[in-house]
Amino acid sequence: MAIRQQTAEIVVETSGKDLYEFTDRVLGWVAESGIREGLLTLHVMHTSASLLIQENADPEVQRDFIRYFARLVPDGDPIFRHTEEGPDDMAAHVRCALTSTTLSVPVIDGRPALGTWQGIFLFEHRTAPHRRRVAAHISGA
Image 1: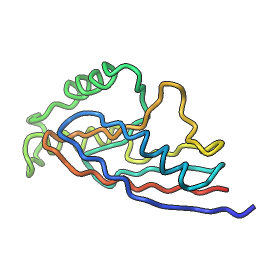
Image 2 (image 1 turned 30 degrees about the horizontal axis):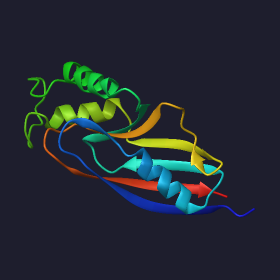
Image 3 (image 1 turned 60 degrees about the vertical axis):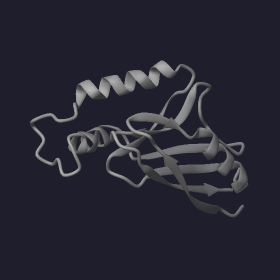
C-alpha cells in the first residue's frame, strides 16, 4: 500500500479576539483527499493566533476561554515592552506560546478522529481583524 500525501492552505478570517471553528472545512478537505487512514497536521502560520481542539457544543466554552486568557495575560500589562502593534501585541504572543500552533489528528475511515463534542478552532489573540493562514498536511493511504 503506497503512502500518499497532500497539502493545502486554509484561510480563516477573524474579526478580533475569539475562537473561530473551521472543523467543517477540515472535514471536507480530508474527505476530498481520498486518504482513509493516516495523519492530519494543521499549523497556523502566525505568532499571535493558535489552534485548539475544544468543545463545540456549548458556545459558553469559547467565551470562557476568552475571559480566562484575558485575566491570565491582560492586554497592556506594564511588564511587556514589545508593544509595536499596540497594547495587545505582546499579550497575543504570550497567549500563543501558552497554547498550540500545531495540531496532529489521526485520520480513521477517511475522517479526522475527533470526539463527539470536539471541534477545530483558530484562537485569535489580537483585537483587530486578521486573515489567518493554516497549513494543512495529510499523509496516509
